[in-house]
Image (cartoon, rainbow, N blue to C red):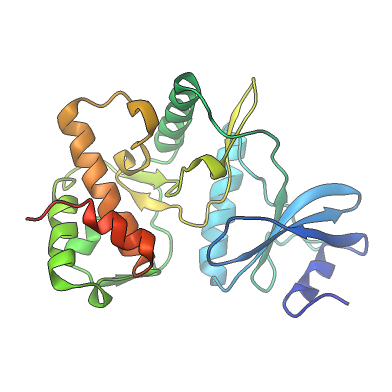
Length: 246
């Protein structure tokens, strides 16, 4: 018997089994699974069908365009998710370690941004510049933050007004990157949405090659986003401290 919520795994066939829980996925339960003898990853959460449709369609698009991503595995009747459960291919590789590795990550993120210009916003989400005038969006609730913190975040996001937007991964930390000699894969797309690409490119070693001004704009806006999306844990408070006073 599978635990509550995981019964949906049976919709991928009779030869299915959970193996072990995986790290990552703040808002979800993520497990390695075996589907018809093949290793895969299953993620169970409470996102809406519209949200999951946006994410799975994005991953299919990126896979078709040659970007290395987890590819949704359909149920036996062809659906890409069922009852909040998504099953995806397992991606091999390790985290970036060197400056050269991080430059490859920057190139991969820029390819993501190029491939998704004009992409519709994830249902229920807001971009950083949307939050200059909105208070909430999926995991963000500016009303829960101190007013001076909101003012600092909005001042950082205001510097992005007028920029072109695309899909951003939203959480390109080493744990969400799988590198081999041949490819750079991005996993865990739970935070992906449409926003200004520079938010993805605040990377170790300034791997994206920003000049000082561009790096400051991106770093401040990114710190503000991370503070807002995670509020109010210790990490979010540390990130808010990094956002300069107005």
